[in-house]
Length: 77
Image (cartoon, rainbow, N blue to C red; front, side, top):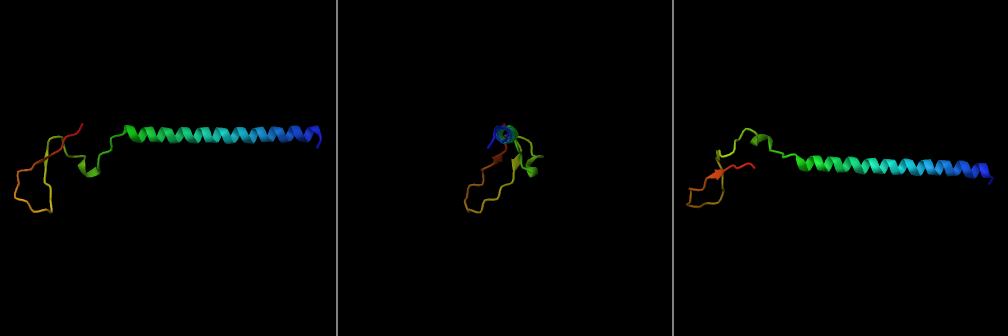
């Protein structure tokens, strides 16, 4: 191989290595950004959006017990 071929090969190798590094860097950054956005959002179930804090809910419990005084209160923080 002569010097010109070695230089051309080196340039293409450096360009390919740089492009792959940049692609990995950008991909990892976007994944971290998505993970931070998911953690920061407080997701509320769509059926619970209209329920205010402190409201009583009707709860069905399939176990038979005699104590019917248990009230379920919703508390949002």
